[in-house]
Length: 244
Image 1 (cartoon, rainbow, N blue to C red):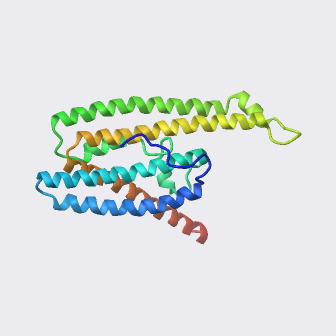
Image 2: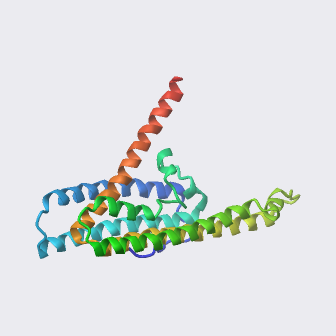
Image 3: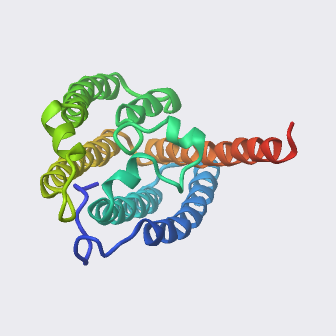
C-alpha cells in the first residue's frame, strides 16, 4: 500500500459532508470485501499456483479499497483537519480507538501475530522487527502531536487569539490557527503513511492464504467496532430520550 496521495481537487473542495457521503459507500464495499474474504478463507484448502494468483488479486483489491479511503481522507484533511480528530461519522466507541485520526499502526502487527497461526520462525522474527520499528515511528509521531498541542496553549498563541480587533478579524490569530492547521495536516498525513506502509509490509511477509486471514481479521475488527459503537450510541440515545 503506497503513501496516501491526493486525488484531484484543491483545498476546501471536499467538505466533511462530502467525505461522509463517500464513506457510506466505502463502508458498504468494505462489508462486501469482508464477505469475499471469509468465503475464500473457508473454501480454499489447497494452495495451487492458480489459487495463489486468485488470492493475490483479492488482496490487491482489498489494499486498493483501503487506499481509496486514505486518498479521500487526505482531501478531507485539507478541507477541515479538525473534523478528523472528532469525526461525526464515527461512533463514540470508534472515536475511543483513534490515534492521530485513525487506528494505531501497531494494531496491524498484533492482529497478524494473533490471527495467523501457521507463521514460520522467519516470519515471526520479521514481524517482531517490524513491530519494533513501528513503535519507534509511533513514538515520534506522538511526540510531534504533543508539541503541536503544547503550542496551542503557549502564551503567544493564546495572546493573539484573545486579542480584540477593532476593525474585524484578528489577522495574527488567523495566522496562528493556519500554522496549527498545517502542523496537524502534516502529522496526520505522516500517521496515515505509517498505517498504510505497515499494512503493506505485513502483506509482504505473509503468504497469500495468511494474508486472507490477516485482512479478514482487520476488516472484521473495523466492521465489528463500528456495529458495536452504533448499537451503544443508539441505546444511550434511547435512554436519554426516555429518561432511563
